[in-house]
Amino acid sequence: MLTLLIGTNRPQSRARRVADFYATILDELGAAYQFMDLLELPTDFLNTTLYHNAGRHDGFNKFIAPLDRSDKLIIIAPEYNCSIPGPSSRLSMPYPTPAVFGAKKRPS
Image (cartoon, rainbow, N blue to C red):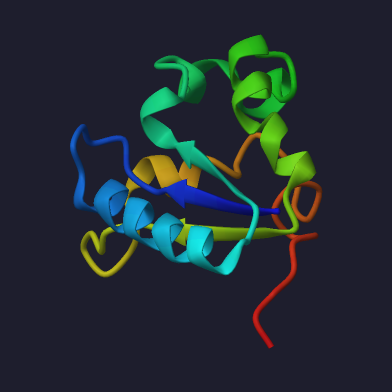
């Protein structure tokens, strides 16, 4: 299964529109996918999921649980000052690499 991560928490983002378009292509190919939208992140995840609190936030744990069923993670994010938006880069902080993100297949 593919996970399409909408890598911004901005409402009505272009990243979401691109992800929706990507999904139509996946539908045509018969590929299984799921969305992971940063708009659905708990609003307090930065303050309550880091360091000694890692793994203890029920809302955040529920948000990232679909990654366990995912073979590949496709991040669709806008460029922001030569990088990605803060919520995208902070998403992996509560968990040690490669526990969640590092074990996904990489492009060959």
